[in-house]
Image (tube, rainbow, N blue to C red; front, side, top):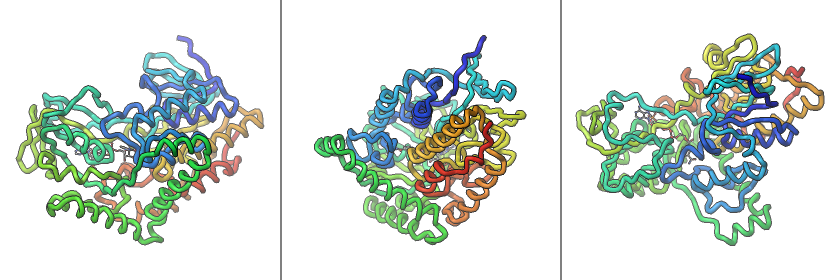
Length: 495
Ligand code: NAP
């Protein structure tokens, strides 16, 4: 089968892939294709549509900087509004016509002679492209728990990433495994309808109140007419989130964890104000520092556990039988439906999400595991020419994915701008620059919560399987954006 040729191929049509496409267009590269295994765009915001889904970063901040949306209905908008925003941006920037849906990429191999990426698709065909960009997200491979007997369960099993919108829990006995950010949103919704709900908690999560409000029609009109007004609100929400990350996570050593203690106290007061049962409060209390794993915001999560038909089970699951769950203490709960809010395989299945073979046969996944997880400025690796990996180690900035995208788009702007200026076609990060960056990240992490706080029991996906916290880029958004526009272009070997 002859392969098709493009200047660039982007894997993933979520916000990162759409952002990369917009940036390529800005650079005058229009002959590119975006492939996505789903049948619609939006990535995680298309795949996830469980009841209660809403963003946990204010939407004034959770949006492309260059594309403010005056129509958000509230400060923390719902999942469907964010999916709509992805659609609107893709249409406005004419990205949709580049996307091919239902296309699964198996792997990509660099052809040194042709100076091309050969991208293999699951249907056996290939795409050739000069540039490869993987925008596969961080939370895209669902985690299916390996609990004894789980396949024997005869009732309905739903993972939160494959929610069945026709499912109605009314009158049912439901069991839900997991108490992460997804479960915190879903549990109150399930409790509204289920006759009986048992929550299986392995590690309690930090929960603080969510300060949310609707935007009136008047304020939406004002945002549309005078965009500066919305920019001002964004500046405020950006600053609050940036400050939180700075004092609680990045400079934990300097602040001696005071912010984390204060935030933990707030969560404690919140539990105290909501739950009268001392034993229940104790069960819901994390034993690791606030921030070790992503904290959540909810006004209804704790209150839900005070309802008589909602039970918290934290003895651990021994096994699952055809009609229910047996706990480590020998007790059994019969259920009709098992909900898996068990999150994602971040490190094992996602770094990288497809097999990538670079120059001299270097296998990215193996190289990361045999050396260390690393990526210069969270986007490029030596021996992988013409490749930008947008879901890389040390890529994610703070709490807001759009900040990550903003610096990555600026990085592309500088890099592709230089290629164009020189009439060059190939780039590769030098080993020296990559090592320098990795050393600096390692040093910066020395000040962070992840190395100074008490995180051992958090089971946090911020840490890779070797126990290193290599997910977050430990610097401020301002610094990362500045670096993306100013990095020495000699860090790349450009031919
Ligand atoms: P998660 O944070 O990884 O939580 C998974 C939950 O399942 C954890 O409580 C985990 O327990 C539990 N679990 C997994 N395997 C288990 C097993 N074998 N037995 C018992 N329990 C098991 O996943 P998530 O809740 O889907 O959230 C992932 C991330 O998505 C969040 O951190 C957030 O960044 C993002 N998110 C964002 C939003 C939003 O913006 N609105 C909403 C949802 C999610 P352990 O903790 O003990 O491992």
